[in-house]
Length: 259
Image (tube, rainbow, N blue to C red):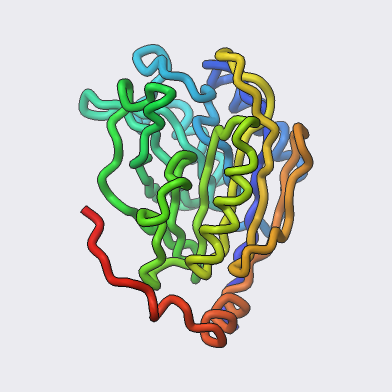
């Protein structure tokens, strides 16, 4: 029997530029996390909110937030994931980090920087399309704005789950919901979207819309609007493979090269 993957998504408020407060709050929210969870995912820039104050707020890969993720992964015996503002070799990255219970780390640097929010003026965009393996699931990690670019998301028959961690504003929630479903349908993949709630220091409102979408574009589980909560789902690799075998779309996709 092929592995199932049990995922928990944390929809929460974020305290602006206060990593210690955010880490403390997330630990409190995780008190009731199910013991069978394989992976827990936090929103984009979960330690700071979507701040551009890189000199003030960015941490190194051996900084306290990453160390906290390592301790949490080891203590709970699961994979912990979320994006952080990272300083490395004189550059700053919006880095989606996955930490395994044994201490191994993998990460993806956000490729599509949100120029309308001046993210491109403060951060360096990632250049590598990264795949993460958890159990039998091949995972394509993305960060927020990446969701709008279908060529970058195109399934080359090399992933089973797309995970997007975001700070996606309330006025564009319709696009968020539509694009999550579109990415699932066109790529015959599970899609997971994790978003924050509340209001940030720039006056931007977030309502959440955190959800799981199945490969047919149907929402499996969705969080309530404007509510802090953890939603969970168990994804079936067997069901995914049966669907792909019975409705063989991916082998007919166009070939292309992404530069």
